[in-house]
Length: 297
Image (cartoon, rainbow, N blue to C red; front, side, top):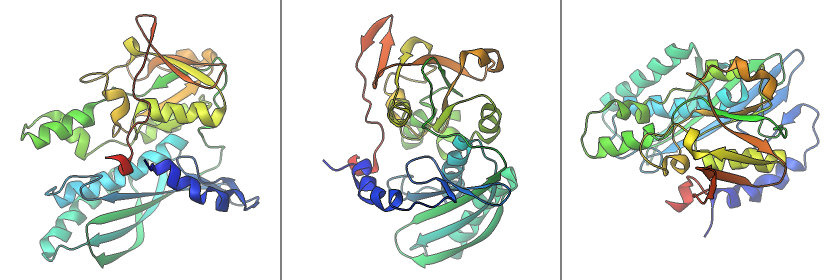
C-alpha cells in the first residue's frame, strides 16, 4: 500500500542534492527555512482538496478559513509569526456568490493574524486550495530534529475535538466541536513562546502518535508517553486521527516551570533508543502509529 511518506521520499534526493548555504532547513520539516542577510525566511505550502481535507457541501467561507489555518499551523510549529501568503484556487463553482463567501472566510483569518495576501491564481476544476505562507524571524527556528534525551514532552491542548466536530457536523448536531473542525486555531502565539525553551516541535496534523514519531525518527531518539496524562475528547483513536493542529514539543526539564499546566500538558519524556512507547497504567499498550494519510483513506 502506497503512503504519502513513500511519495515524498521520491523527491527527497532532489532536496538533499542541493548544497546551498542559504537553505537552513529544506523538505522534511513543517516548513523550509532560508537564511537572508539579517534574518530567516520561513515558508510552507499546504494543499486542501474537497472530499479529502474538507467535506463536500461545505460552506465556502469555512473552506477558506480552514485551508489557511492548517497552513499557518506549520509556521506555529517552527515558532514563527506569519507575514504574508498567496493562494491558488481551483473551483468548478459558477455562482459568483460562492467566491464572495470564500473571500469572507479568507478575510476573517487574515485579519485575525494581520497577514498580507500578496497574490495567487484561480482556475477551473475540482475544488482545491493551495496556500503558501511566509514568515520572518531573526532567531533560529524550531524543528523536528533536535529533541534531546531527558527532554519532557508536552502538547498545547486536548486531542480529538476536530474528530468529534466532523462527526457532529455529519450527524447534523450543532456542537462547539464543529467549530474546532472547520475553524482550527493555529497556535502561533504559543509556538513563539515555546521557541524560547523547546528543543523540538511539530504540529499535530496527522495524529499525535505519527507526529511525535516523526520527532523520534528525525532526532534519532526514543520516547514514551503516558496515555493517562493525555487530554482526549472521545477515546484512544483521538491520538492517531489528526486535524487538531495543537503543538507537540520537547523541552529540557529545567524549563518545566515555564509551562503552566492549564495550557501545556506534560505527557511523556524523550529517552534513549529509536521507538515511541505508549504506557497506560504503567503497562505498554499498542496503538495505531500510522496516523492520517490522504493516500490511505
